[in-house]
Image (cartoon, rainbow, N blue to C red; front, side, top):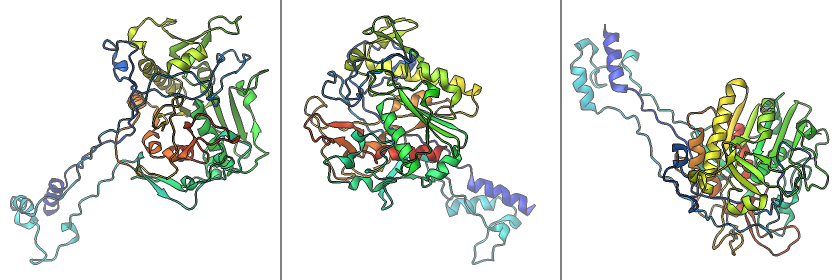
Length: 484
């Protein structure tokens, strides 16, 4: 009887620990005057309020399903990039903290104890010695892991590979060690999440975990940076002649006259692991309106996922999607993309604005992907949040720069619980698609961009969008590795 009463007291004292969830990122909001969104559907009311842009001149983009078409997009040539009217303003989210479990006050304990039979009352250590049954230990609340919340810390073991090496995978334009830049202190930091186990990345462990599996990155040039980063991380930047080029299996071959193929795929024979990247800047299906005209426009189907994604979804075990930096008027015009919805040119004013159209597409792609997960139970799908830009005193074409070389000059910690990319966060909520949340932690690293440095040492516009490698995208892959 004493034990039963004691347990009753224990439940009263301890109670039920409060539960709360943590998620992350707050993104720059786009001022969009292109359409009246007051009557937009619910999914549109999460208005995408930022616009990002790659700095490339993209004169022509081939429709994904016409594999023999010439791939002519240029992500890196910024000298002829179209004018962009939308500006970015990042907004930090407020952050809240769940209440902590505390002990009852002594007088409350004594009052409740008085209501119990004398044999069950708690006694002071001055009165008598407690038995094991009488000892009450309040549980320590286990806080929820949020990989996007934490801090940057110095680590002498970084970087994970040399910026002078990894020439087999790393594009020279992103290898800042090969440029005129002289300060590389930004390489010596790692991300330390709050309340999370963050294992050290080791290529051999990654490959073992991905035995007989395929990982695919599908997105814009920032997705390509993440792909190249992972290849360098796995190999340690060392030449790896045993790795096989299997792009042909996915139609990823360089067309005659093309600058590059639409993507790459490599297989590590020791574990039968394939890492793939496919360029799909908008994640939309792109359909040529006139297949006989080389200068044809393309229907940009906002409500249909990219053809490549649909065609090869069954091949993936891990999938990472991203979009954002091509959603501006200049890019749509340069690529000859015409927005379609419901199989017809868009006439819906709610989708006329670039921000609304992007938000609608993100929700549409995530909804479709979530509907496919039951058919592919082994698939782990992620949507990566937007990678921030760091232009100061103008845009890329109006004198904007990112000359800071001091690491973490604006702080080293992310405290917010919500994501800095509310569109992506809202899209995955309630689905089986996970959020790879990298925006806020990347926002702290303005010193890590390509900036004004280039291999040819030529003056031109600054690149405050793409990152130096080794660099911030390595951290994105560490977080991905931790979540697998």
